[in-house]
Image (tube, rainbow, N blue to C red):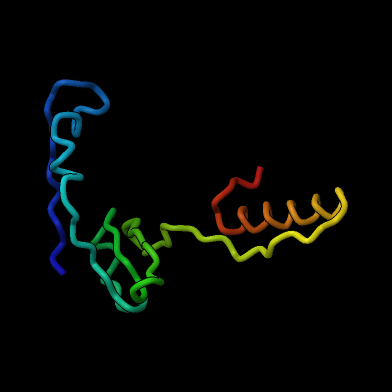
Amino acid sequence: MVRPTRRTISSGTAAWDADSDANFDIITGQPFPMYWVATTGELPTASSYDDCLALVGTSGSARLYISNGSTWELYDNVSAHVPDSTATTASGMATDFNTLLAALIAAGIMAPS
């Protein structure tokens, strides 16, 4: 896989969104190819692909990873399965709800405080 080159898109017509405001379809107007491997061991060296994304896994179960310049980190967080509540009391519902919150925090989907 050849490292993609960064392409600066600048219309110069706005402030914070000037890079994409008039050229949005260049970024989103069509699907773009994504590097895809079966296991994380097959990913290229992260330092050579800073700020790049890659899919790891098989069709239907692939996970998205991003390079921070030194390692590949899981980019999409998925919570552990939390079963449906069968609580019949307010106390039981509170317990089930706290279990759900703990799973979301553990997955990094929700901040711990």
